[in-house]
Image 1 (tube, rainbow, N blue to C red):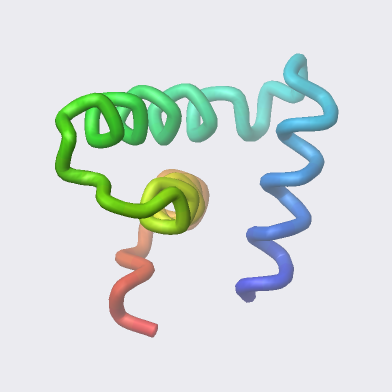
Image 2 (tube, helix red, strand yellow):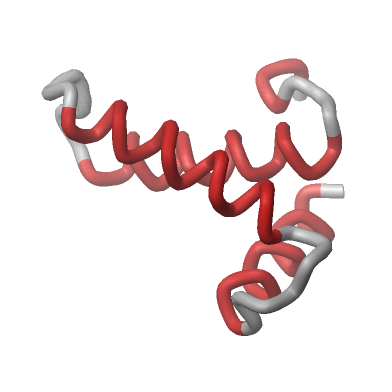
Length: 67
């Protein structure tokens, strides 16, 4: 499933007019920007992982922490 989410994310970034993932990208981006600007992020990889996990959560409806 993780590979499928990765492919969906790449496709959504490549084609921003893709209606299937537009809402997931927007929600994940908004929450990630809020986290990054809060000063809580101490490493770049934390921000990228958070964005990926949020995108996965909005796309699948499942908690990515349960892997």
